[in-house]
Length: 589
Ligand SMILES: Nc1nc2c(c(=O)[nH]1)N[C@H]1C(S)=C(S)[C@@H](COP(=O)(O)OP(=O)(O)OC[C@H]3O[C@@H](n4cnc5c(=O)[nH]c(N)nc54)[C@H](O)[C@@H]3O)O[C@H]1N2
Ligand SMILES: Nc1nc2c(c(=O)[nH]1)N[C@H]1C(S)=C(S)[C@@H](COP(=O)(O)OP(=O)(O)OC[C@H]3O[C@@H](n4cnc5c(=O)[nH]c(N)nc54)[C@H](O)[C@@H]3O)O[C@H]1N2
Ligand code: SF4
Ligand SMILES: [Mo]
Image (cartoon, rainbow, N blue to C red; front, side, top):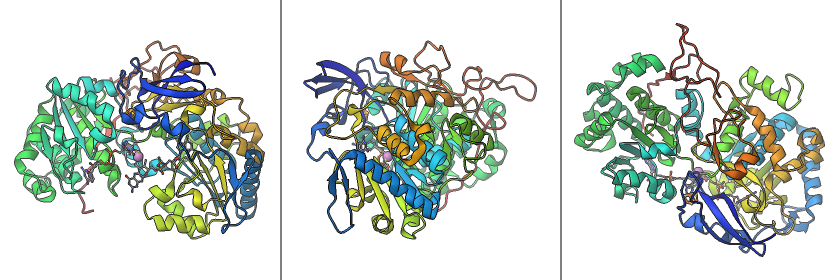
């Protein structure tokens, strides 16, 4: 390949910063920030600046490996033979034990195309209910919380809101270390006068920058969030007009909130009453305010409720779906947002659809050219349950792609027991010596992000094309291609014969969802080669940005008429078109 500058996206976190790679002699020599990219405008953190180093690091898996016996070392094999072996052994297990004996465990670090194909293969063709992803460990709570409160997954706003907020509520997120470039954007606004409230049991690097640091007891957030809403209501800082027009379920809240007086909340959280009161005054007095949260709230048995409680605050103050305001869950992984949209957890189907909904199944069956009634109306039970089911022998084969569950899933011993108990473990990784590969029967060599083409979607629904900048080493192939080739070898060539990643993406574009506004129709590879673009994007839309969702303009989402036949300003994708309040109590962890 000729020497060139290639624009792409940093593969390390959900901020999704634009990068420019200097490619010379078939190698990426240097990475700098893309000044034109809407996530970072040229800034990069250390991880982005050094993202090219792993491409040529020692230990890449350049060939496939197959282990004939568990006690032996895996032997180097041609990739064609390994793919054929993977396919025939999967088919053998399906024949003998049925489709639910097979599981896929995939990743928010893969491209959109790979995520889509994995789900298509699992739900559409193998017809197992077991496909899960590492995002289950990460932002599944935010996803299900949004769905309940607002009707669909994903933040309603965008990074542009950071430039307009007057108050930031950062709770259970260490942005300074984990989303550094977005944190710089936030601090720019704080320097211009906005106030930063940080809620964390630890005095983190993020807390060090706070105007008000609330050092809560771990697991007491629900009490605090309810306590803030109690005070907003008592102080007359709610927005009754917004509540009446765009929400339902408020009626039961005032009585419920009476349990969350500053006195009681202080006792539960360990905070000073005065600090709780101050936080509520800042939020109530702000013209615009945003909340940012991540693992401190998501990784909890009450994770979904936490998202509901945050949405309650925004709905009650009407601080949502307008510039500078909104609940903004930060995405950890570079393409977890894409995976959530592709439905790679539980019963999800592409385009923010669900296998539990008959209409959604019918739509997807049509797209995949399957007979009506082919898709199953159920999903799996989640990541932890998946490894339990492997350990108990119910799930007999697991194909792990772009994740290292022995290192990252809770209760390591159970994961190891599950992998040991399984008849067939296939891993697909870019590196050879991972904790999980040690338990694999077949190891498939994956290309890294810069070695294949694909799309990544960041926290704010922005799509960036990752072009192929360099050749993958040895026999390694992009994830989407390995998945497609295994599917073809299993006999599903009709559904998986794609010439390139763009052809897969073209199929994904057909999954426009007028219920949720999920819409890539106006975004093709051709547009993405010019610049990143944000969905919802109806065909012909000029503006590459689409910073606000749920505006009732009928372009990507079906136009909503209310009971009086009028069109409200906002259309939440719920049955009534209104967002929902949920009374979620604080319970001990
Ligand atoms: N350098 C680096 N950056 C990364 C990653 C990485 O591996 N390395 N991973 C990426 C990924 S996948 C993710 S998910 C994100 C994670 O990003 P974050 O969620 O921001 O990081 P964590 O350190 O997991 O947790 C955030 C904070 O939650 C706090 N916390 C713990 N328990 C509670 C609680 O009960 N209540 C409250 N309010 N807070 C609590 C912790 O003290 C911590 O400061 O980072 C992304 N960015
Ligand atoms: N103890 C503890 N556990 C945690 C967390 C924690 O904070 N503490 N955080 C949780 C969270 S938020 C997350 S998101 C998960 C993440 O958990 P994992 O998904 O296990 O995370 P990674 O370490 O990113 O592992 C990714 C694997 O993919 C490989 N890889 C990288 N690029 C590619 C590629 O392009 N293709 C393929 N096929 N492979 C590739 C890497 O070599 C690596 O083995 O961990 C969760 N588990
Ligand atoms: S903030 Fe995230 S996306 Fe941006 S450069 Fe750092 S790791 Fe990459
Ligand atoms: Mo994560």
